[in-house]
Image (cartoon, rainbow, N blue to C red; front, top):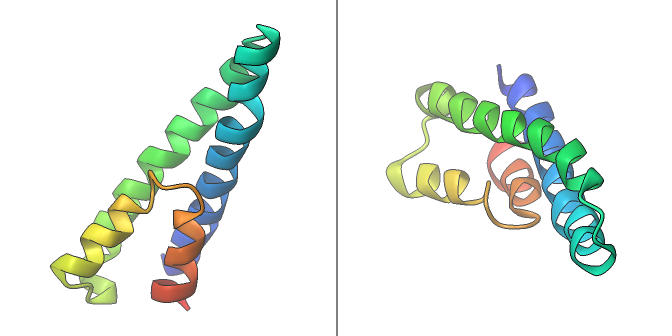
Length: 90
């Protein structure tokens, strides 16, 4: 389960960065919403999987409330999921 969470965490982080730093600027600078539409749904699914797997893994990994809150908040901070992988999953 930890390996699955690491994979989802990585993919969620990459999709968030692509959405934030590639698709959104293209949308607002060139008026082309295609990339946001293309990346939005996969990112949303990965985000939900990240949250669900974090909840499932909480007991297995013995995360206290503070660590668990940080892990959840890192899903909405750019590069946050990479921090979680390095700090809490290795």
